[in-house]
Amino acid sequence: MRPPDDTGHRSASNGHEAALPGSLGDALAWLDRHVNLEAIERGVAGRAAAPTLGRMAPLLAAMGDPEASYPVVHVTGTNGKGSTTRICSTLLGAQGLSVGTYTSPHLERLNERLVRDGQPIDDTELEEELEALAALEAFLVGREGWTVPPTWFELVTAAAFRWFADIAVDVAVVEVGLGGRFDATNVAHASVAVVTNVELDHVQILGSTRVEIAGEKAGIVKPGSLLVLGERDPEVAQVFLDEARSVGAREVWRRGGDFDCVVNRPAHGGRLLDLRTPGGAYDDVFLPLFGPHQGDNAAAALAAAEGLLGAPLAADVVAEAFAATTVPGRLEIVGRRPLVLLDGAHNAAGAAALATALADDFAALPRVVVVAGCLRGRDPAELLGALGAERVALVVACAPPSPRALPAAAIAEAARGLDLPVELAGSVPEALRLALGQVGPDDLVLVTGSLYVVGEARAAARRLGCLPP
Image (cartoon, rainbow, N blue to C red):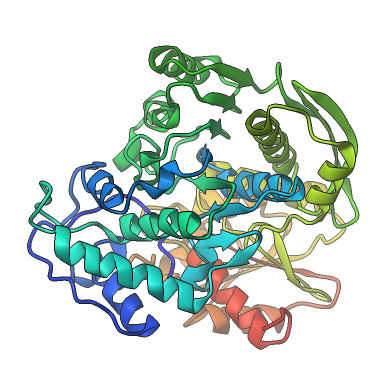
């Protein structure tokens, strides 16, 4: 099962018959028969429909509203929400809390999306959750106003909320799949709502301007919640301030005033940060993640944790948590000599952040061979152009393993348009092998353009012995 880069909200337009699975393989096959962008492309599901929470609410109500049994930190944003979610979870775990973490998409296995105290759900528990949902779907379709079954993402989200209740987590940190207002995760009532930033992405679904997109993301702000607002642009930020006032949020903490990363410098293996929150100052904190943008994510995550707990965190707890943070697929090193770096940048803002990270954290490796693959609707020239033609020695073009893949030839055409040398590969593993054959021990291989490509390359790196099994 491959991870959709877009975890958006799709529903079948015609009949769907649920079958109770009897093993994890059957359960995953049952899940994959539900609508997502992949299913639509393969012709095994209906057309996309308007976004709605009309299926999630009765589904969770039938399970006793598990999402209401623990406080929720809800994280949205165009970029950085996955990193912020993981950092916040690690901080809360370091406080001694049992933390459920829900992220999307996964890189290699569905289990990665549902995490308890840093450990993904095991196969047996995942099978149990999906079996329960299959039985419930069979009961509910045709009742409770359901005219169509839930989507793939809705079912996975419901499984996460139910599992977190089953294992009695103290808190859940939940990443929005797409947008916010109509995202399946938004059935939860956030104690703390976090917004990392707003950029242009998924414009066909969320809106064509940053203000319109902000209006969708602002939907996670709930009555009585604390809003941790990372967006700095005054016009865009005002959308969230208006939403907070309208729904009766209890407070708003803004980046630059209430919290911030005030010092952010590269260090061996990551970043060294000075952070400020309403409750305290945390200086010379080491974060083993690359890129200046991770300082902004760290500040938002720290503010969110403090806001949930209602008190500042001890400096040693923050240091311990940050040092233990990992974010797979985001400027992740999976090989050395040559350095092999994976990053899922797939929009303009992500490409710019990646380019800044290369200049700031990896300037000592001037020769870069790029393995690049994108989905349709993405601009490979934008991605490659942001990296800088002066550093890119070669582009190895490949197609992501997805029905929505942009052909490798289109990647190659974009590279040639930037006067970059290019070679084509028939698959992501082949592209990685080809790239490794073109570099010396002091060069950099960068795999980017899509989380599909990153996930496939990560699995290939594991087979090569770069990652543990």
